[in-house]
Amino acid sequence: MTLPQQLRDIESIIQSDLDGPLVFGMGEGPSKSISGMLFFCYEGSCNSLTVSTKVVFFIDYDVQAFGNSFLVVALDLTKMSFWVKPALPPTQNPNIVADYIIEYSQELGYSCNKIQIVSANGSAANMLLGCSSSYLQIEVSLNQGSLQISNILNTFNKFINCAGINKFKPVF
Image 1: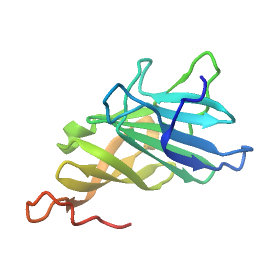
Image 2 (image 1 turned 180 degrees about the vertical axis):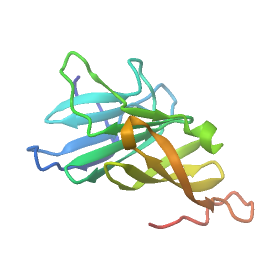
Image 3 (image 1 turned 90 degrees about the horizontal axis):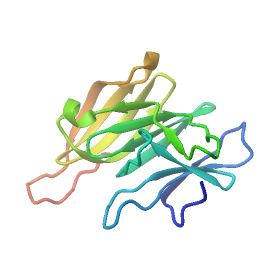
């Protein structure tokens, strides 16, 4: 896959076993959409991170390195998709399919539009979700090939005094 015309929300990580940085970024989604495709690039070659063989559009994503590995989490209105140290596939297959998917909106009762990985290791990830009326700090277990939200650690009110102004942002 060739490099998309323009990437936004770019993040890069360095891995000791590679010569250059791994670059992640959002590409254009459908017309007049706030979402886009998530791309993973290395040495001028880019591939899309997807949840299946069809194109899926994400709202937000985050990347966290730990040890000689890394975790990528992408968010749409109902699902979180997880890739644990994805590798670029051969050029005939431009899509990298997610390792795990959680239907978080049913489990949490919220639709969210922002995600931040606070910490990650090989067995769990601690994340902050920006949802419709709250921020949620959650822990996701990555053990034994299954994925589940194991704990809601904190809930922060997003809007105080009902004025619709976000005045409280937790800091980690």
